[in-house]
Image (cartoon, rainbow, N blue to C red; front, side):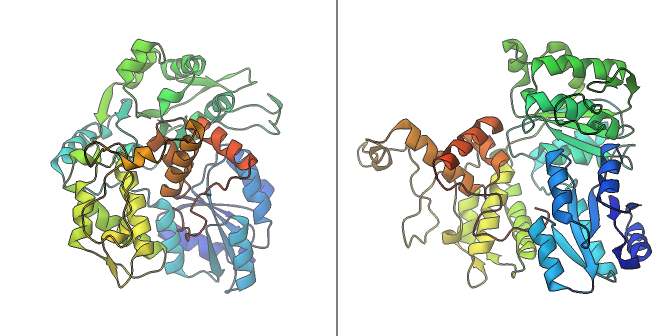
Length: 462
């Protein structure tokens, strides 16, 4: 856990820093926003910024977004000033910590940030076998390719390997290759010099340098352009990188982990992924089973997510009824653990009288009739009934393909609480394609669900 304190905190820096150090965090300090940006650009990575609310938090967060620096921000101010707290949250801070700092509150915030779930929640033997193999190879420096369907927990597995490795005290840096435009991904990985391209306002240390000594995760590496694959292969072979616009090779020491939700052998055969890079990455392959193949994990995961979102939303933990659990166990879970998490998040918010029943379990691909109270899901679209008549299909007649596609995309996005990456995975399209379509809908004045859901309370650090 790396904490960067920004500002004076009204003289409480020493106290806040000591509390964080006692909780196992590595703490550093800068005086202002410019100092914070300089530190982050230069490779002094952080998991959390604790920022004095007297500083311009909105400007800081805007700069972080524009330079694609992903880090959590909390605001800190004297005592419990409601107006200052509200300003910090509106600016984009995830939490507000009153000063003088309370040890338990800081501990809770640090725990929320560092709760990367590197420890799996599981009971099924199928997952147990994979974890035993992961523990066996975690202590080595071998590259690992983690494969599996979207939502099975590939990044969680990567963090598990890092936390059980000899590099556990060093940085763990994750890069989502699918979420960053191809023309920016090179700079993200290898860094750039000032003026290397339009918008390069200062030197930026890339993720390889930032992760040196630790672990670098290339998430959804199969989305990487072949041109960039060649440069990545050289970096792995030579253990050195070149910044964009730079003239000097820079030595790096990283353990490389990669994930993909595709059949990598098939990608190599089709020419979409370099065979030599594939063999470099695939020293060890960990294939995560889909949730439907690990049914014993569904009850324990459901309870885990119910507890997580009850705490995050400040509501009492509801009881999961037997009928609701039966529905969960019968579902196909094409979105896997991520879909189950979203389902339980909604269920907690909808639960009444302290119970999650069938009415609170809203599953993808099913429709519930008004007043429906039994545990049997209604027929999905594409499942003919009544002698072959399909009412759902019939309702589509007369509509354009574009209209049906739009409704499918928006409904899926709503189901995912506005999370673009999750929705793209369920829809089977790239994040770029999804964003382009959502932009077109917005330009036509069609409401698009925002991350977190417009009417749902956003849990801290979710």
